[in-house]
Length: 241
Image 1: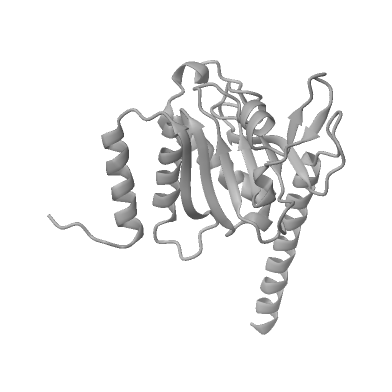
Image 2: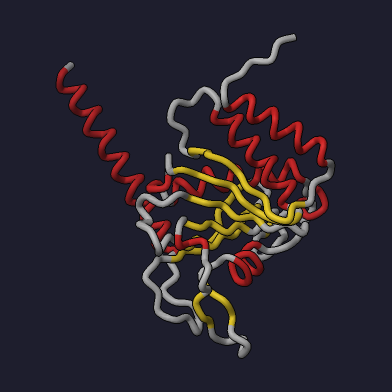
């Protein structure tokens, strides 16, 4: 029995080590060595695809910029979503607003953004839903059946699968942010993360909150009710009949 227990423990350690090695290899395959026309930097970047629906051939594209102004090992993880619908988070949010770089007038070289969010956080920019930016689907019907609910579930699947590629960010303080039509995407994804975390003592998505800029909401009253309800749930109140 003792020998079997030792073998089981050894096998478990081996499998964990193999999984960590595979995750590291997948992350390294996504590492950006240097962008065209990029100035020198002291932070790491990654980009690539994460499958969210293998049967449909649906995958979302991301650009991840690690923190520079604070230690990346302790800085929070922040997801940024642009809206539109149809606006690329990589092409707009990361490249024209809060990313690490700006594009020079020559269209060929980059300069450092003086106010990048990666001064305080690890920034994850996601092109969502499929069909936006570099994100794609091999099922044409996906481009006609996309909706806010499907977008939220795809983004959630992306996050869970992305964390398998970057396991060092599991359990890290996590925030969801965005602007414009992401006034729909951000609250719905936040609600999905929160509900899936319920009952889990140490969730891999350590959700701390969300923020929306220049938001577009279908109905302000519904937004206020949503914020009230999720706040009530998060502080543990119970509503009576």
